[in-house]
Amino acid sequence: MAPDRDADDPSRGGAIPRFDFNPPEERIPGFEIVDLSTLHERRRRRRSRPDAVHRVDFHTLTLITEGSGEHAVDFVTYPIRPGTLLWVRPGQVQSFVRPGTANGTHVLFTSAFPPHASSADRLVSDWYGATCRQLGASPEYAVLSTLLGQLRAEYGRPVQDVSSEILQLLLATVLLQVDRLPHPEGGGDPHAGGEVYARFRAELERSYAATRRAADYAHRLGYTVKTLTRACAAATGQPVKHVIDGRVALEARRLLAHTDEPVATIARRLGFPEPTNFGKFFTRHTGMPPGTFRQVHQSRQVTPGEGAA
Image (cartoon, rainbow, N blue to C red; front, side, top):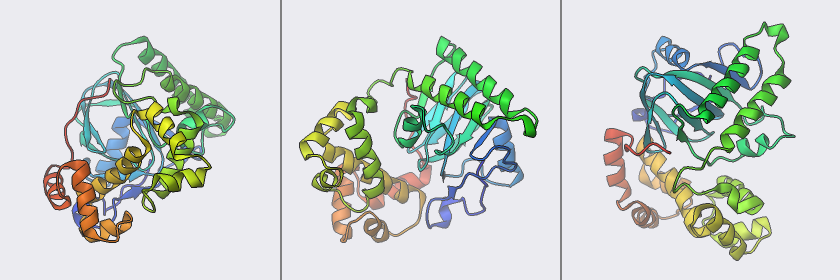
């Protein structure tokens, strides 16, 4: 897992703490599988707050097998219980709001670890996707539990006997099985937008702070604005401009809630030369001015929400 840092308290200001992939004992580069309780114990040993807000530069996939608790990802608090599946992607902001008694299998892996010749490579290159699914005691839960058990058995072999290739192929199978799960109601289907939407989202992630013009993205990708709009409508039900603005607004919410950077600094980081323009943009998309949003969310950090289906 990533190292806990003493500076992971958002009240200290500055950027949101970001953890690199750096497990205590890296048996296989780019991959680790542990109990969730082991992860929490590491944090306690480092005297790190269990509810500290942070980003990670890698993927975490967690299947809860016992107990209960709460986990927050980007302003939504998900209830976790046996059968909960969590997939947190690089760059998302999370915290263990209430670890409670929850335990389960916790897989950590970099985007480079899954085999590039498989369809799983596409899944890990997407920064978006459903964060939480409640599988309960369904057949899908049983399949994933079995696959994760196989992953764990291979990872637990003596170091000299562990096969990176077997781990990569098993992980690819896990991810493809997750991809077969029904998409949460109202969450859209990113695959419906095809290659156009996938390329657009990758470019958006690189450039959201540089431009909010749909025409700029169309020009960079070699499409028309109409083509991007069709892809976004198929994947999300929204036009391309709404998708662009939504990504900028999400980053603004993250920085306002989890850092003490001045509003003017955040505005400049997100491509707004004038704080007043940023204030109008933010109010239009969230219903409140930046200062009010910060005041509300720094007092409670996350907004309780419905767990995904």
